[in-house]
Image 1 (spheres, rainbow, N blue to C red):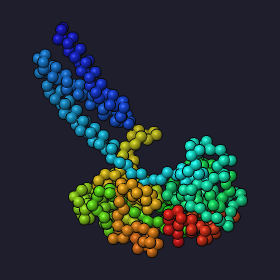
Image 2 (spheres, one colour; image 1 turned 135 degrees about the vertical axis):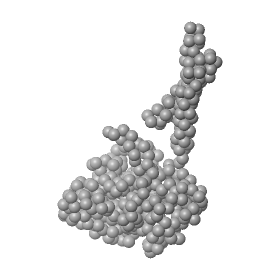
Image 3 (cartoon, rainbow, N blue to C red; image 1 turned 180 degrees about the vertical axis):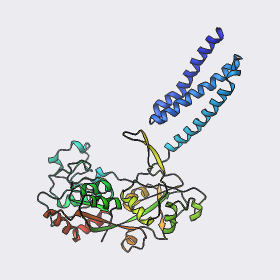
Image 4 (cartoon, one colour; image 1 turned 60 degrees about the vertical axis):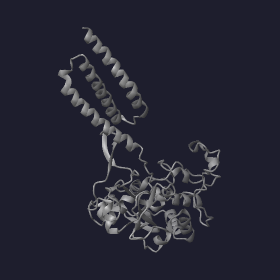
Length: 405
């Protein structure tokens, strides 16, 4: 009876010690239900490990040796996996997207009084210029009812600058993700969907994927593409990676899974972790065009919480591992390169810059477009498209940081 009482007391105390040392860590640092379960199991198994020694002291451990030894092995396995997860959390996630808020038209982000942009009064906003946008004095202006526009994230700084130069200043432009915004940004996928569903008049995007072309066909509409500029599609690695160059053929073989180690392309002996982007995004569509029909290997994936199906697999966001390989458009990567987190790779020995984009000596140069529907007969759409061919529009594209035609 005394041994049993001692067993219960020590069991409670040992579990309490485990909770104090490990439970508080969970409460403070755990980032989700999946991680919490892992940590909770570790607490339980460590407690059982403590109890094993106590059983031995009471000479009652013989019946518990094998099961508790198994528990100990499981605990060590979970501990190792948890260490891996914790270490992974500290690998820097390089952001391949830009903050669209700072490109909102008619908003001066250098004004210290504008701390809460969503609360900004419309009458105050219309007198302002956003210094983050390219600016010119245009001879062309819409007086009212301009086209509703949408587009890719990477191109928002361009068409936001168009808006500030030629659109009336008293319309609703912010936030750009709002359904009723005159100039919204729904990403490449959303912009094409909005266009074929006739929710917007003009979209600014990279070329359409086969799925997007088929969507227009299903909706019985015809898309028309006006080329307005060029952009480099670039590949990058961790700045500490010794690799500096890939050939076009090597890129294709890496993303088809035929090349899996950096030593095969002149780098050090390390497995290539080649990230991808979401299907139908502008950059993923560009990669598919480079592959020229060759099947892409399975992309690195992460566990994310779905709305209805629990934990699902999603294309992993680029994380700057020492062996990581990523891609994007040049505009996205400029800020990342400044932070020295990544370095751009030469392709066929050619570095991506304005000159190699203009003369297309850099192998991966993609065009971007103003896309409309043939069925849209609005006069304002026709006027906008004509202005996009002007020297004013080309200058704004160049000032933004892209290459005009």
